[in-house]
Length: 541
Image: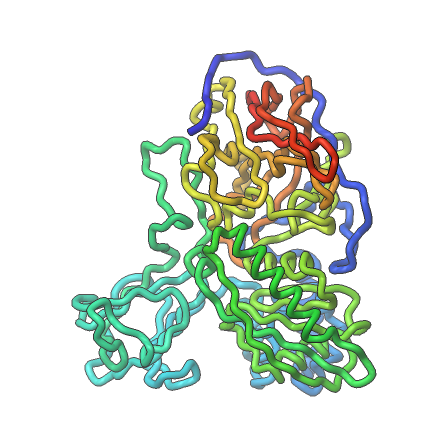
C-alpha cells in the first residue's frame, strides 16, 4: 500500500521545524485558547485529577461538611465551585446524586470517586422492560454469570466500553445475542429469532472487548505496521443513535428558532456521516423546555432536569437562550450550544465522542497554545475535518490506511512514505495510506501516557475554510490512550510544512522532509487551483 525504502544514517542535531499557528478571527463557540507550558499538559489516563478539578472538589466538600450539598443550594454551589469548567461535574451525574439526597458526608468518598471516573460502571440485569425497574443481578467482573432460575430478565444496562453476550442457556450456552448498549429485551431477539424477553439465563461480560469490524480491528503479532486503536467505545459510537435536541426558553431571553437549529443539525448529520463513512448516524427528536433560573450553570442543569436527561443517554443537545452563557461547552453525554453555527455543533459533539482540544506547540519556546490547530474541528478556528489521530480514535479509518514506522526506526533507519490527502476522509481507490505513525518509546516515568506521532496531509487543495494550503504536511502528537475515558484524545501539532520545502522538520525525535508530490491544476471560478493526489516524505530518527 505504501512506498517504503530504508537505509542507515547517523543522527544529527535539531533542524528547522515548520511554521505554526493560524491567522484569522476567533469564533464565539468557546473561550480563547490559553498558552501553557508543555509540562503542564496533564496525562489523559482516567485516574488523573487536575489541580483545577481538585479545587472544585474541595469546594464541594465545604458544602458537604456543612450539610448544604443539596438541591436548595445547587445553583449557588455550581457557580461558586465553577462546575461549568469541569465536565465531570457538569454532565448530569452529579446533579442526579444531589437531587437524590446522596451528597452527604457519609457518601462523599464514594461519590467523589464516581465523579473523577475511578469507579467501574456495572452491568445490570433488570426484571421489567424499562431502565428503572428492579435489578435482578449486577456485576463489574468479566466472564460468565448465570441468573437465578426464577429470574425473568427484560432489560440490561450496558455502560460505555462494555459489551455483553446474552445466552438462553445456563453457563453461557445456547442461543445468544450480542449487545453493547442499554437494551430492552422485550424488543430484542436471539440469533435464532426467538424473543430474548424472560428467556435470558446467563450472560458473558466482555469488559473492553469489541467485535472485529472495519472500525474495531485486531493487530496480529506479525503485523508490524498495524496501528492499534485502544478506544473501548468504538463499537458503541459507530451505530445509529437517536439524539434529543432540547430548545431551552427563558423569559426575557431569545433562543434560536427551530428553523435555524434544524439547519445546524442537518449540517452536523451530513458532516459526521461523511467523515465517519456512515459509521455514525445521528437521528434527532425535538423537545421544548422552559426554565426559570437565570445563572448559566443553573439554566443548563434546570434544562437537564426538565428534559429528563439521563447519564445513560448517548447524547443530548441543549440549545440555550442567548446571553445566558458566555460559551458553548460539552461534558460526557451532553452538549450545550449558544449558537447555530454548524462547526460549533461538530466541535461540541466531538467532545461527547471523546475528543479533547487540538493544540499547537511553538517549536522555539516549547509553549502550547490550546485549541490553536486549524486542521481539526477541535480548535477555535474554522476547519474541514478532525485530525487523523482523532479520526483513528473514533474508528473512522481502516486498518490498511495507517502504517506504523517503528520496525524501521527502532534501528535508526530512513523510511520514505507516500501519503494521500485526508480531505473529507472519503473512501478512496488510492494505493497510498492516509498517515504514517510512530509510537514514541516510553521515557520510563511512572504514569506517563504513551504517545504517538501522526504524519498526514490534511487537504488536497486550498479552499476558503482556513489558511491551510493543499499538500501541507502536518505532524501531530497524540496519546495512545489505553483505558482512557471521557475527553481523552487531545492532539498537539508539532510541525507543519509545505510539499516543496527543502528542509528537514523536527517533530519529537523524528526528522521529516518532503521529497516529492503528485499534483495537477484545475480551473475553479476562473482561477487555476493546484490539487494534490499524494505527498512523499522521508522520515528518520
